[in-house]
Length: 138
Image (cartoon, helix red, strand yellow):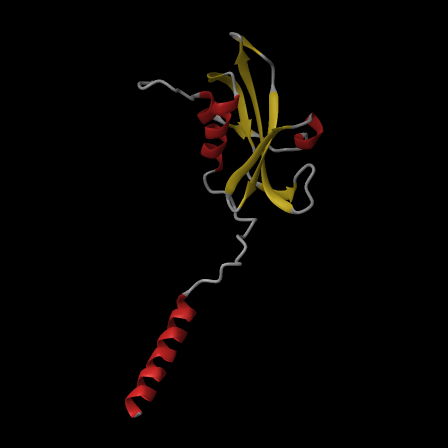
């Protein structure tokens, strides 16, 4: 009988220890983590949506800023991007997009009206102008 009691106590302690190590399943990710690799994530997304991503000029980007994105309710990190892409071998004129981040990663990259990034402090974005999709680039 004493062996049975010890075994039951051991099993109870083991079950309690395992339960303490199992992370809860309902943990929500932190939405407002400062995006560390935002420039590369923007480039990786733009090369999929721009007709000719290898000939972009006049590229500019802002630092991430915590604000309520257009159409949103909650504050999120956003980045404004401005660039002049080529379409059918001609430059199409300046385009502007807002990149919205969730949990430190690009969640959405949408075209924006001029007023939404009008007061943004743009900085040169040479990495976007140097996109090369070939195996060997300068």
